[in-house]
Image (tube, rainbow, N blue to C red; front, side, top):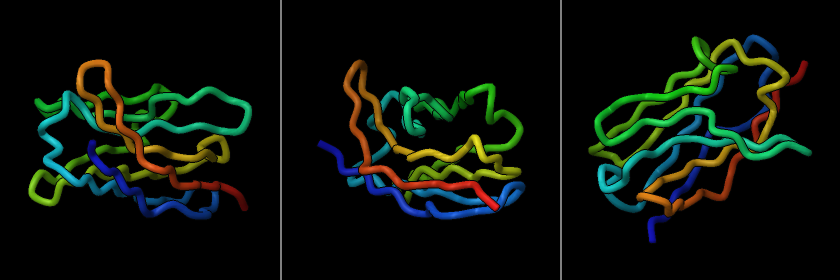
Length: 115
């Protein structure tokens, strides 16, 4: 079972930027895709961004043009660059790695967008 460790969360003002990073304990190219979900209080967990083994990316409509997902195969890390952040981006962000129907999850990192 892979271990996923997130870092980079925190408090940011509206319009600001944060960069999340997820370190995997194994080769991230072993997975069908890796990426980020988020969950705000009272809401279901939703997909934010993903990148598959072929390098194709997918984004939630709410973050398109503001967030960018990337990966470093040598370091086995996945990053989420978040720009022009909004209060509605406030949530716990979870890194994931998927193999067919199986998901591995990180512990989550809190992101708060507030003035």
